[in-house]
Length: 399
Image 1 (cartoon, one colour):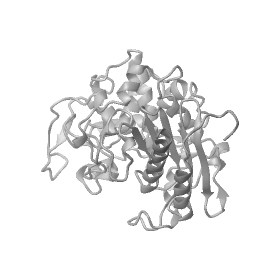
Image 2 (cartoon, rainbow, N blue to C red):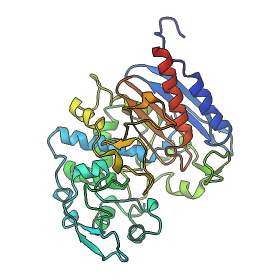
Image 3 (tube, rainbow, N blue to C red):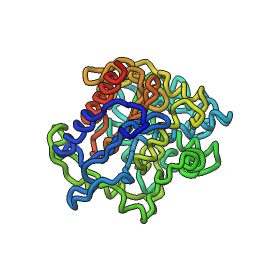
C-alpha cells in the first residue's frame, strides 16, 4: 500500500478467481474495478483482446456494452424528468402517437390478429420498468410476436430508429401494460421518446447531457475508424449448453453486426453503445450521492427503489430471477441467492449480453464493474463469483 493511502479491503481472492475464468477460456479476458466516488479500491486487466493474435487486453480497451446502454438512456430520460419536460405516468402516445389504441395478444392466440384492446395505455413508467408489454424476439423464439418482430425487421441495423419504433407500435403487446414484466426493447422506445421531447437525435442528446459532463470520451454509438483497433474481439462459447466449459470461438457473424454502425441508420438506445472501463466507471460513480452526482437525489432514489413486485421479474421469458426486483436502472437484489453474498442485499445491478456487468451498493457507497466480450455472458457465474468474493473482502475489512 502506498504511504499515506488509507487501508482498503483485500480483493486478491476476487482477482484470482476472475483470472482463473480467463485462463480456462471461459472468458477471453477481463477488466474489473471496484471504487468509491473518489477512490479506486481495486483494478485489474488480464487476458486477451484478441485470442487468435494474442493481443493483450488494454486499460483503454473498447467494448460492446450492449444492455449497459440502458442505464445511460434511463439517465437521459430522468434528466428530462428533472427539468419538467415529461412525467413518469405520461402515456407513450403523448410523444409517439403511433402508440395510441394499442392491442394485446390474447394468451390463447393462434394468429397475430387474435387481440384485445389494452386495458390502459403504456406509459413512460412502463417503459422504464419493462412492464409495457413489449418483448425481445430472441427471448421468445418461434412465437407469434418473435416472428412478427423479425418479419417487420424491428431493430434491423438498416432501418432508422424512428421507423423501427413506428413498426413496433403497429404490433400487439404480449400483456396488458403494468400487468407483467418482460425484458424488452422498451428502452429503445424510450430513446425515441427522448428524441421527440428534446428535439435532438438520441445520441446527440446523451452526448450533451451524460457523456460530455462526465468526460466519457470513448462512449459512442457509432465507432469511428480511428478507434476500431481498440475494440476487443467478440467471442462465444464453443459449447453454449455448458457455460462453465472452457473454449471460445470468434463470433464473426455477430462481430459483423456489432463492430461499427458508422454507416448504418440504426442507433439502439437499448443496446448499441461502445464504451470503456474508465467511462462506465465515471457513470457509475456519478450515480452515487454527492456533489458530483449526475442526477438529483430524488432521481437517484428512483434508481434504488423497487418499482415492480419481485414475483413479476422473470428472465428470459419464463425463468424467475430469484430474489430480484426491478427499478428504473436495473435489477435490485432484495434476497441474495445461494451464489450471492448476503451483503449484496440492496444493490442495484445489471449487465450486457457479452458479459459487461455493473453494480452499485448504496450502503457501502461502492460501485463495481466487469468488462469482457463473451456472448451469452449476462448473469454468468464468472461475474457472480467475482462479485461474491468482493463482498467477502468488504465483510472481512469491516469486521
